[in-house]
Image 1: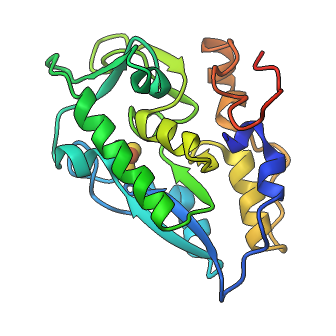
Image 2: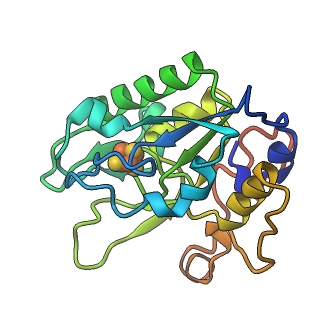
Length: 224
Ligand code: SF4
């Protein structure tokens, strides 16, 4: 499930201990791997450094794109839907040259899902906006254009993780990340003004429709 829409799932996680820390799957770039398309980490590690530094967390980093396509690589983006639509055969992943990366992205996603299952991860902390790891907002077709388009939805790896029952949070879900920090450190008090990505003014203005996957993992909930 997407924790930004299901805070009760975070509250239901077992209390972590130093002897038995939370096992957290982490996008490689968030963990400091230089696995971005350009060989960098996108400057992301500081956004989750406090959480990953906790002795109550055991990070399991992985990059599905690097696994399948290598680094550096061309830019994968979703065409015709999101990661679940790719798994259903109704959408594709193309790079900026029009090369079809759908099979490779699915292979990388499977490898990430298999690692998550083998490692018995309890939570996944993933980089939003990625065609693999995105969970709240992703590009709608190629991003390397004068006017980039966006859509709400999930990346291919995120879709496989959600199918496997792994709860997912993004580095832009600041309210949920604050709640996670508070679980790890009871002395930490999250700011009351923290917002998750779908609550950010930019998202509210530009993507007002409900997230199409917000009810995943919560049977019976109205996705509207
Ligand atoms: S595929 Fe995921 S882990 Fe790899 S660079 Fe992109 S966002 Fe980071």
